[in-house]
Length: 417
Image 1: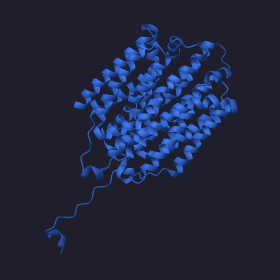
Image 2: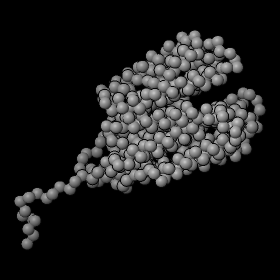
Image 3: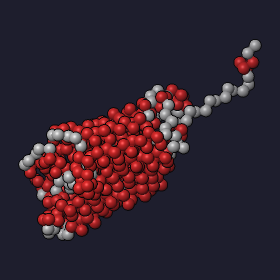
Image 4: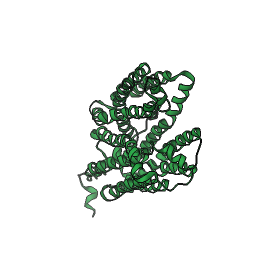
């Protein structure tokens, strides 16, 4: 006779399976360190060509000055366009097959493509390879997905701020490296050196990064569904986060096409304009490096929406006075203040994006977030250039500052949802 059929005690409840973040709580610190190093090296390699890109374009057979400028802009922007296109795809695959494979794919792909750029023979090959680097690469994007999904909820803002600091440091140091390295090993050798740096990051990713990923994380997760209801996506919040992420890079990049001309109008000598412009452009990245981790930790304490709204308002108000400067150092100081407030946005946005969707879709969501950021990086210079041409250089700061403050209103509306 079956005794259990008449047992007065209810059957023992099976414990709910651990989520992805809980299973990886012993790995996230070492993974964060590798992701910071990898983001730093890949951004150094991608941005170090800025000082010598026109020279390389000329070396590839382009002769007229206008064509050199045009092809340089196309080649530089191609990588960001490629990343904007494929970031959601890689995020979805990260949800399906794991975060570590996406990191390895990005590092190996970028190491190979960066080396191939060093053997390009035509400007068309240069542009195509830069586009491919964005399509198959995106290490920083993959790192954001890994860190954003592995880190405990109460440390997410701080960790994403640290990751953002590594990427910003790479963007800041890259042009400095690019200004020195070609004189030692040549332009083509510089690309090989960049590929080697990324290869080191790939090796560390393969050996050091650990991940406990189960196929059940990908789609059905039937066991979890019986334990807890699936988190429903609030599309109004998602749309507001994507729009804000796009505005962050759009605001930062809108001045890029006009900054040299604008500084030239501030009384800077013609032979110093390029150098001063580089310093001013670096000021925003330097400011962001100083505050990214602190503002990320602040988002953990007081909430992501509070940090987003406050930083948007502060950035908007730091943007508008840039239209009234009379000295280049004033512009640099205001750009640094702008960078300090901008730094709090991306970690807070990523933190909220992680928790706005079900755990099985966090990679895809963070991929869309990366796509929005790179779209702003592509669209920002275009919009800034057009405003500068038709409305005047000062109007770029007024329009961008107004858009940021309006975006703060959008964030306040989204918070009430």
